[in-house]
Length: 146
Image (tube, rainbow, N blue to C red; front, side, top):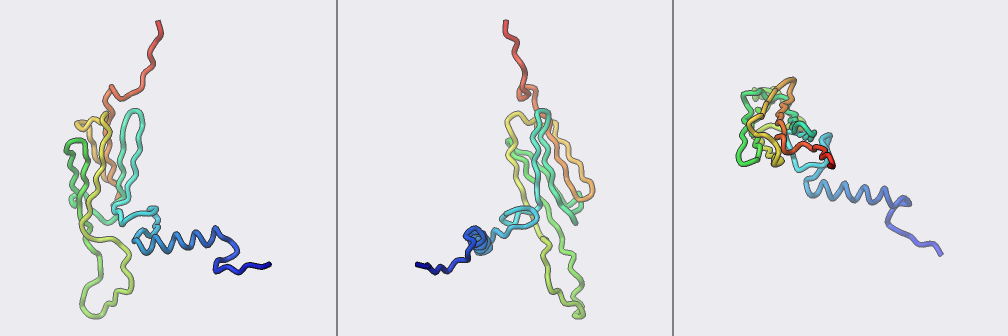
């Protein structure tokens, strides 16, 4: 007996399609940054035994448009990216605008051994790099057996 199904022959393709539709319905459209809820700026965090590095990718934002604050172990990054839309003289029609503009805010909870006093921020080529040194107590060490 042959059973008919509304699904295609490849169930995995059908599940992938259904997942994409659900993500679109919930506003979780996968982007070049991965699945996100409109997270701008895109952010990477790298944890090493010596440091914690937070990279924020902020193309089109100038360093003076970004504020960094640390309060009670939380790094707060706020700023604004101004729109770069053409003039409104009536001769220009905007057909698509996928570039984020407006105010943004990202927060990062720092690990307990991150030294807030050692924070260093460098801005280069649209990337903000914030680095924290680790306190000595956070580094692994070997204990000699007597």
